Amino acid sequence: METKYDIIIIGGGIVGLASAYKINLKYPQKKILVLEKEKEVAAHQTGHNSGVIHSGIYYKPGSYKAKNCVDGRRELVAFAKEHKIAHDICGKLIVATQQSELAHMSKVFNNGLANGVEGIEKINSDKIREIEPFCRGIEGIWVPCTGIIDYAEVARKYRELIENNFSGSKVLTGEEVTDFEHHSDYTTVITPKNKFSGNYIIACAGLQSDRIAKKEGTKTSAAIVGFRGDYFDLSEKGMNKVRNLIYPVPNPKYPFLGVHFTRMIHGGVECGPNAVFVFKREGYGKTDFSLRDTAEAFSFGGTWKFFAKNMKFGLDEYRGAFSKKYFLKRLRTLIPDLQMDDIVPGRAGVRAMALAPEGEMIDDFKIEHRGNAIHILNAPSPAATASLAIGSAVCEMAVEKFNLT
Ligand SMILES: Cc1cc2nc3c(=O)[nH]c(=O)nc-3n(C[C@H](O)[C@H](O)[C@H](O)COP(=O)(O)OP(=O)(O)OC[C@H]3O[C@@H](n4cnc5c(N)ncnc54)[C@H](O)[C@@H]3O)c2cc1C
Image (tube, rainbow, N blue to C red; front, side, top):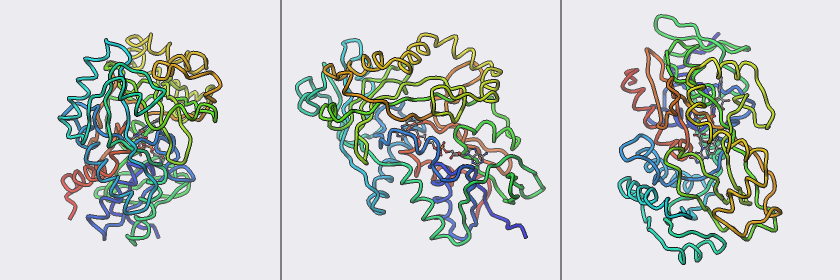
């Protein structure tokens, strides 16, 4: 006989798992089912990111990103300590290399103050060298509360806690949700192997969030396109040139861009990523192609408008994808002494970018509700840092919209 769940969550990334965990913490008796299409949880954005515990300094005061990043970071660090998940609050340098960046750097600093980011200070070029001896900049910001962690490990811990602590809840992998049947007071979720019924649905499908929303019957004007980020790793020879995290001042027009250096929690230093439009949403190789993904992306007017407005950015990023020399040139802005044999090709990740019909990037987190469903339509960086805070926000929304008791 089919088991009926209180809530079915679609997507076993960090956002879906954190949401299930937070709802179960508040309502331990609720039966929650998380369905993940891949063999393991955290198979896409959660397992392919930079592993940075972001401070919250970048985001516009008052935005969901600002609030959830700062709160979520503090909660995540406490969670990692409690559950003995390896992490390191090693701090990060944001470095201005040109006069023209100083005004925006000050804005970032002021955002940090307004967002309550602890301990930030403006520093001069000598202090930059003291913190990172190979880095050159004219001024910078030292952000001591930034850290590093493995988000796939965090997601696996959420799963373990859900399955071990809440007897009615489950996380099933290898179950791709392909359709929905709505009934008067519940919904049946269909996968190629099974049917599951739930009173409420919460979709946290990352790169597939727009498709799941449409299938479920929730209208959304935004569409998801994928942007691949390629990384290089510092070679053994280059390893001594970076101690921790070194970032440029973000370009206000493209805040998610800008190659940086990130020490990883399990060892090594990654450099990157760039951001190139992908022809396959979950394609990590440079030539991966999906006819469906490409046709959908180009049948959406917002994609064309986005390209028309951002042609130069697109071409620059493609150059970085195919030319190591060009990638190195960009990295040298921060570490001028970096050599060709200091970097070797590394892995890649794909970001879900939500585009509005006019071609604008939707920057903030976006959660929508309709009937018995909640959809997380946009959860870009720093959603991994903020996952526990997002989980709480989803839980509050479920309490309000679904009248959970
Ligand atoms: C290159 C890169 C670097 C980043 N760096 C950072 C960082 O340093 N710090 C930070 O905080 N954030 C970072 N981020 C952002 C962060 O990784 C994401 O915001 C976060 O992982 C989003 O989590 P999610 O659960 O929404 O998505 P995902 O992790 O993509 O999870 C969605 C899940 O839904 C599943 N799914 C989709 N469709 C279905 C279906 N039909 N049926 C069942 N399951 C389905 C997918 O298989 C997937 O596992 C980065 C992202 C990228 C790509």
